[in-house]
Amino acid sequence: MPRLFTGLEIPAVVGTQVGLLRGGLRNARWIDPENYHITLRFIGDIDDRTADEIADALMRVRRASVRVHISGLGSFGGDKPHTLFARVAPSTALGELQAEHERILQRLGLPPEGRKFTPHITLARLRGTSPREVADWLALRGGFEVPPFIAPRFVLFSARASVGGGPYLVEEAFPLAV
Image (cartoon, rainbow, N blue to C red; front, top):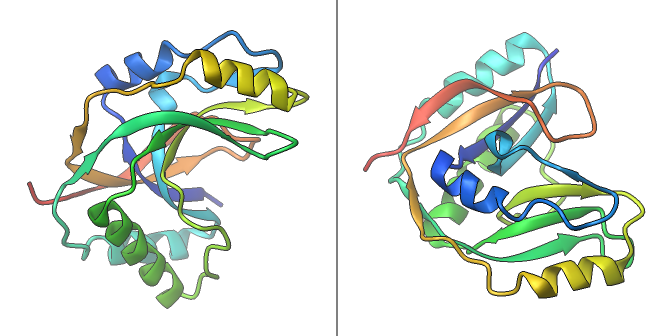
């Protein structure tokens, strides 16, 4: 039973730049740069037949390529931080692509995503790291930014059942018009 999600890949050169942020934070489990991505829609564990239906439906998506701008850093979890991330600037194109994935998956009978779409690249999973440590780490790296890039396709990723972080495999790739 595959665990699937849709997303945008991060070019290797951008992954290398973002990967330079790794380190300097206690109890952080850093994501390897080759596993950086922007999740569009988490699907979860599904049977092979449903996976095939999802891939067939995603083939019909016709969208322009998406300009991606990584600007800033943040964390999820508030008083109990659990994730450190690089912020992806929201855009109309990115939001519309994500919304189309949501509509497709709901039409196939999957439940709606319960969380608001917040485009980001997960850098590390945190366990037992204090809010102060996270705030200090973020403050030292304020103003982080890399040049924008164009995402020429979105992909259907699979992941092994784990606590996250990869390895992620590209099961199908779907071109976006340039």
